[in-house]
Every structure is written in C-alpha cells, then in structure tokens.
Length: 431
Image (cartoon, rainbow, N blue to C red; front, top):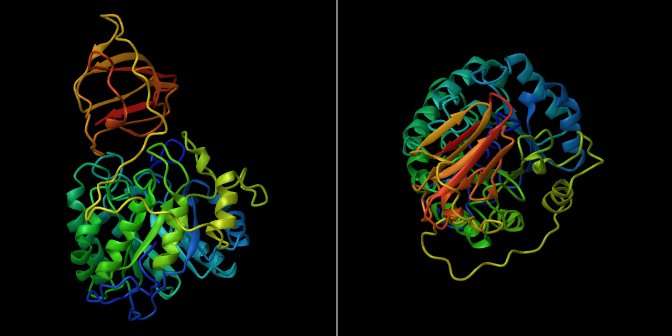
C-alpha cells in the first residue's frame, strides 16, 4: 500500500502451490517440488497489518485477524530508513505471537522501499537486504513459517525498468548471505505491474534464484477493475509455471474500482494465496480500506465484513469475464465519474507551470498547464497528501492518486489546479 496516514502513498494465483516449481511446466495447475523447509502459498488467505506504525497493537491485531479465520498475516516492518526500526527482538516477538495464535505462515515485509525511484524518501532493495541480514539470527530456523517479502512496492512509476536487475541482485544477495526462506518479490508500479515489467521478466528473475524458492507478488487496486484483467494476469503466470500471490488488494481505491470478487474467485481457481489490505489504521484519505473500526474485530466495516464472510469463509460468486481477451491486455481503470470541465477561469488568476511539477508547503495557490496526458498512460498522474483541497477543473482530487488521462481538459485545453494546505507538509506531485 502506498501511504498510511501521510506516509503511505496512495496508493495470489497461480496454482495450488508449494514454491520451488519447475519452469518447464506451463499448465494452469503447476505441480511443484518443495524446496527444503519452504512455505506453501497457494491456499493462504490473510490480512495485512500495519505493525510498524502501531507497534502497541500487535497482540490485539493478530488475535483479531486470527479470530476471523485468516491462516496468515502480512506484517509491515521498517528498516529504520523512513520510520522507527523494527529491531531483531521485536521481529522475534512478532513471529512468536503469530505461531502461538495458530497462523500457518507469516509474511514480513520492509515498507521503506515503497515507491523507490519515484518517491525520494524511499530506500532501495539493497538497503532492505542489509536490514534482513541485520536481523537474520531471529529468522534462521523459521523457514517453514516465515515468508520473506524483501521490500514493499519497490518501484513507483519512474525508472521501474531497473526493477529486474535490482530484484535479481537482492535475491542473490540474500541467498549468498545464507537465507533459505521462501522469498517474495513485489511488483513495480506501486505493486500493480501495469507495465508488465514483473510479468514479462519473471522467468529471468526466477531463474536467478539458485534455490528456485521464489514467489512473485502483485498488488491489485484500480488497475484490475475487470474480471478479464485479473484472469489474464493470473493466466500469464500459470502459463509460465511460476508462483504468484496477491500481496495486497482492496475493494475500492483512488485509482479505480478493483474487482475484488474476481480477485478472490480466480485466485481460488488458480491456486493463488491472497492478503487483503488492511486490518485498521489507514489514513490520508484511504480510511475506507480499514476492515474494522477502532481495532475491534467485532465491529467490521463493510469491506471487513465482505472480506470475513467471502474472502476468508469461502462465499462469493464466480466472476463473469468480459469479452474475449486480447493476447497482451493493456491495463485500464474506469474513473468513478467523468468530471465536467469548468469554464475557462479569468486571465491572470492562474500561474502556468511546466511538468513534472512538485510542491510542498502550506498556502493557497492556483496553477494551470496544458501538458496533461490525454491518452492512457499510467506513468502520468497527479498525487497529493495532507491537503485541504486539490481541485482540477472544478472536480475534487484531494489526497488521492489519479491518472492524468482520467481528468478531462477545460474548454481551452488547459487544466486549472487549485491547491490549498494548512500544514507545511502538504504535498502535490504532477508527473
């Protein structure tokens, strides 16, 4: 997930599956040879917990998640680069707590890598590897329980081509350091892989792991708003005989309306594990992704109730695919509504800006540009957080991520931007 409170930016299927499979088995159901002491991911169904920001909620959160019937939990950690470090002793406590509560597996991830290459505050996968090596002693011996998710969403929408080599280097560095765990690698593009960088390079990355004990993780939000897009992505990994999980997904988001029914139904069909985002504590405009109110498992939100009764309990309906898929689908995202362009504001009110553009700070400003992308291009977007208002051509985009092509131009071909923040850490970025 990209941001929790002001830190998280906005913004599992292939096969009934024990990781460590053969690349040469291109079937929808992949038979696998288990690596020594690996974790089988194909039937895991769990929930994300934002531990690093809520360290005092560990026991209550994991107890609540387990009480709903989840057999696994994905736990947010920090290596100290952006947030307070989760040291070895605290990680040992997390593992012990999860085992005591009866989880089948736990996935640990470093969240500080979120959006690397685009978010200047993020750390690299190499820096995440250094953290894993630092706490290696408490992970050794837990290979059949701990999934090691190297780094959360380790590239945003800039320079994501570097994801391939950086991921290979990180996997091999962990193996050279003696890690025997099942390693999970997140996709670029804030985890959603709309560029198909992970999908298209997965065989190369998998082959680089000397233990062949690697799982690919996609995060499914607005890019996956149709059943066909979900199925096509899962099918691609099934055809390659490679392990996939859905490390995060939601039921709605600022970048579109993910098809959660299709995600769950097809994940079960293809044998893919999945983890919903998230138990509680979301902020910055994405509070709707909380599964419970005030950390109380007896008081679920609508998203939480659906997840508990459908994603964890086996309910739900089979997804209805859209029309015949194209061989290589292009991710699309349908906005909730098409904003109506306003009339051109009077001259002299707006300062023209050039893109890319970023601003941080308190105050009220008026800008305009004629350089938004009008064709489908997910690397061109507007994102903001900690604002009181961000209005573009009369429509409200405050503290959300939105692709530029989803925002119609005004009558004169310009986009008129009204920015207002009462705090110095207000932020907008237009890429």
